[in-house]
Image (tube, rainbow, N blue to C red):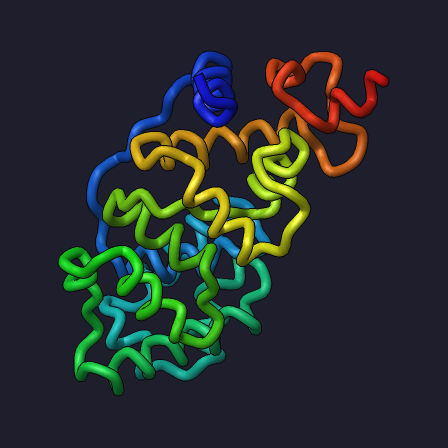
Length: 217
């Protein structure tokens, strides 16, 4: 069994194997992912619900003053940064294709869908990957700070920048394990493999970990 297969198995044994929850609207997921930047999932969800309560359609959001959008999403934090970003994406989407519809991305290859989304200002590879994985169940791996840090410590990838980490992990993690790997690596990074003072003594991955092996010698 390969190292990545062993890591996936250990993560699933400890945290359970999460399953994709089914298809969601792509534009909804893109906006939710933008709202989730630099805040908790709970705060992002509250901001999203508040935004949809305030505006009946995404077209209404596109046409709204930025300060009204910011007011609607303030519960999520960084509203003055995220509101203009959301409005600009909606405006650019309208200019590109005359409608606020991204469902057609379901018919496109992964690489084409990622390229289309990352062409929007403020949408990087992680945001595009989250959107496509959560909305469409695509095996496109989002690499956030937790996934990146834990993967480097385990020795799944060398010390590289975020773009290279996406490339390497995408090529390493089997497609059928992408969803569970992403969710469980984040859980592991939040509970055990902290940036500072990781809890190596109680880590169920320590026998696969290059970082821990370095501490042991």
